[in-house]
Length: 410
Ligand SMILES: Cc1ncc(COP(=O)(O)O)c(C=O)c1O
Image 1: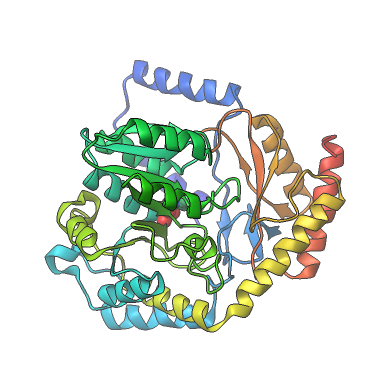
Image 2: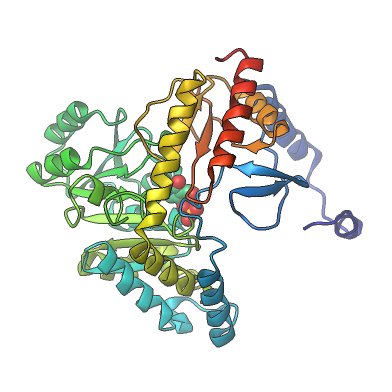
């Protein structure tokens, strides 16, 4: 935690000052963010993650994280992290292609490839970098990417970095996607990219249809499975398993910092794609390998995902309970759906006011604003986990009902 004392120490150091006109131009932009209700402030979290969290010094019920299976503080994961740290140290101080390729990385890659029914896998420092890597390494200006309008920012940024031709189709609109595929037959490489489970809306991409279209139009597919790995599908293998196309998606990416409770990102796909990324993906080549505790933690998390389907069952029981409860108190929420539940507020100020009033009542769910979601669709995003118990869910529903009534939303 940054104490006031530490802050003061750094404030006494000599800091070279920016020119006044520069400071003023930055401040003007910050002022306009504030005026639009889009200014972001960090909240102080201390203590562990879980169904309860300590925010700004106060313990509240937590509905804002992505620890969907509640593994972040699992004793077996903590032990795996400690053992790897004792054996290998805290960091590796080198890129994988220099001297950082300890045996834990290929071990986790083999596990991920097997888990996802693909030939090979590659680890990245973050899920963000995994998306940036695939798109910028594989695609360039001779190529076309067909990208869903609600794809994650890291996909948007990967497309921009690659200088590829980008064709955005409205969210899940397969008719428009097909028209675009028809029109862009002559590009060198063509790739459809979607999120498996949309992080801000909680809906699952229609991968059966998308993969079918890709196969018909001879186009590659890429799915970001950050929010579905460990969660969706009979055995937690993700959105492809849930939609019946396990093993038919060409490239899958994801974050290891959500249900798998670690850190970093992955890409799974054919051996050729993975070899290509090792040779061409700059965010892989020019960065240090992850701390050894990370692959050790994620290997243990995968073992638990495979051994304990009851965790997924609890997540779905909690999700159904929460969705039904929200409908009962008057929120417009589908009874079916995933652990990510958006409550649309429609404007940033209302989303942040709802967030604060809910927090005052002891529940934390983050207000989500542009550019994380399109303007006018600002929302509260609730994330249900396996570690919530019925008392947590009931207390949250009471607080949500009171807040909804106070803001005249229900
Ligand atoms: C859909 C999606 N893709 C990628 C990322 C980036 O993952 P990471 O946090 O590991 O960089 C996130 C979220 O953080 C995400 O929600």
